[in-house]
Image (cartoon, rainbow, N blue to C red; front, side):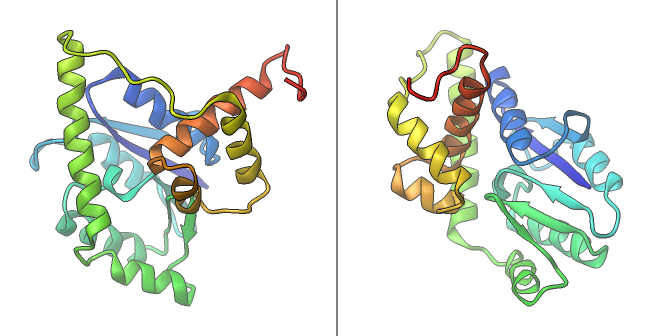
Length: 200
């Protein structure tokens, strides 16, 4: 069973993006748990508690990235230790890590380390929270899309064929991993539209 968790900024668009990304990863709507607020170490996270409580052995906790799961390295270590002890799989950045497999066990062991990618991700989220507040106050408008329609279609096709991981696609298209999920969701929605033609 897939259980999804997202920690979102105060921007309504951020929550929708996270839900869309989790759906792309296979999580059903009624299995998605969302907490709001990216800052504050003492902020309650009832949705995380609910998500962890819903997990049984051999279930998979799905998050788009580790910085959406934990608020600090110590927090991440505690969550990873709990999941491993309960024989729960963890999916992040589009890859499933199984604590029963050698590589997965190594990944779980590494999650207690202070690696730069996680810390930089937390900084990005805190910046996002500040930007969302400024935007709500009329501070600035959103950015224009980086990829044109042809590039978006190419990205989707490469992902569907399994040619590259999410991290590799992010490097190839010069996007964040969150950006990759956003474009995948946009293209999937476009292709599912009744008027869609593969020649356009």
